[in-house]
Length: 315
Image (cartoon, one colour):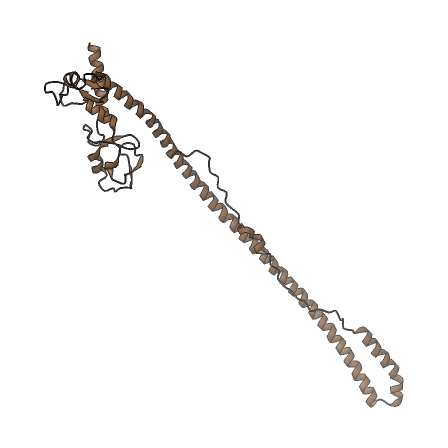
């Protein structure tokens, strides 16, 4: 008998804990369940989220799991029928003895649970309106309700642990992505700077080559000009001698020097001949085809690769 009473008190304590609102710490009234299965008084939730509106994202006061306020407000949250049934069974009462009086039959206590009507009744109720219905003792039914509630809650607790682990993994993944992004940022800038240095160096090489070409062409041009001026000078001297001989020379002098001058003229004409294929030096710049390098939008610096871990969607 003592063992049965101890078991009953333990059951009473266990059920009492289930029927206490985590906000007001009193017996649940208008019990409303959140998706995480934590249950609260409707008015407590309204007070807790008094500044929130329909459709807004809120968090469970106990486990901080996110959920949304229904479009018709907090009244639209689902009722916790298990809690309501436990309350109807009379697991909690202001009577220290744990007995709950029957409203229909004064002096009688609710000790039975009608399995057909799903309600608590007294002996008088059972003998009248519920005479042909199956029933059980309130304590037995309350224990079954408590067990079913625990059975329904445990998988949810496990799922919460899974989701919390997913949240932790998500935070870790975000942190790793931030680290990787910073690494890529630095690498891209360094590589871009390296390309800039290469381009600047190659531009310098082109300009150096151009300066060398200018110096060589200038030397060649000066040398050619000097040769042309020398040829002109020698031919002008010949013309001057020839004119002077024809104008001032005696017949004998003309006869004596004519053959020599004619030979000199032939020699000058033979030695000083302008090349017909002489082309003035020309320099042009042939750029690399950037359009080919950036074909299909290719970035000269590089490209990014994004890898996503495979996993099934749970939401």
